[in-house]
Length: 248
Image 1 (cartoon, rainbow, N blue to C red):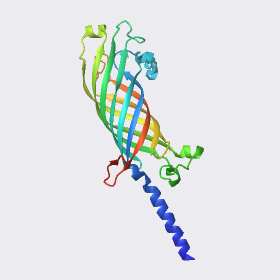
Image 2: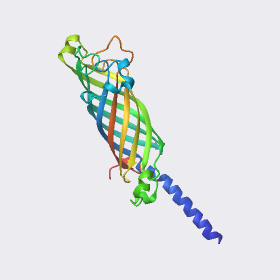
Image 3: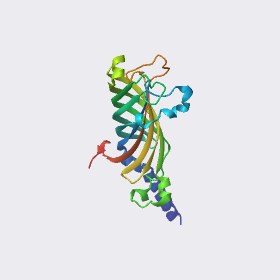
Image 4: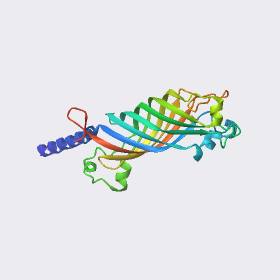
């Protein structure tokens, strides 16, 4: 009688241990994201007394788009590091704001490399399931178990060039430059299959410059910031025997 019980306990231990190690088989992830970008500088916008929480500054005329590519490495089950490269457009205009008579407008093209750390404060319960890896854990229960939620921050740099309208050109601007930025954000992913994730991510970039739009107001009390709302797709790469990503 003792032998069957010991065998069952041993098998349970092996299965649990194997499940706990499944995520290590795919420690690398290639991620692409796209979505709207929002810029908040010294051109455009309402004064703080007319603009609670800055919500009136979020307009279609100010919105542009960005594209983001990442390579992630899973240091632990709840912690990733990622190399990120983002490119896109930002826009600032005095139309619809507290300085409409000034008439400044700037289009900003940028490229931003960054090194980011992610912490998963809610981790899905699907990817370490043997049934999930075989595609059998479906339905609403499978959906709930497939969700991740994470926060992230890091450090990066943004190189930018500015195209100004006549009014801003006449004022005199520096047409471009480079600045350090600090990304901070929150995201969520849905584990769609053993190979693919889909997700959404909201992030703010806090710049060390007050000149991303080519203009610094004498009344400015903070540096420029910009935001992304990206929709992402993730492809998981197998970990090779040498610990590097395998494309086979």
